[in-house]
Image (cartoon, rainbow, N blue to C red):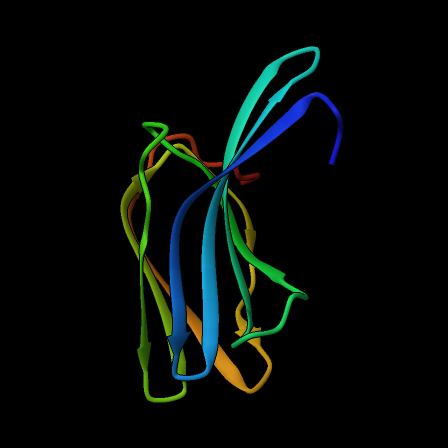
Length: 110
């Protein structure tokens, strides 16, 4: 992480079926101003975290809900501006995303 970036913890969910989740806002002021939200996971009580999902929010406080359903992690959010990282599995769990809308999708080639 660059010195030009400030990280803020927006939410935490500890020990959901043995997993700790953290949602961070990462504000970088370099050539252009970038603000991303990261969803991180770790085994409960461990320090090493994995970035599961990153996105540009529509508003700075747009935080997803995170649920454990069986052996699946479900990450839900109404809308985002753009999506960066989107892991499909972590450890032995599948990750599902329910994103209502992506307002600035990457262009597709036809």
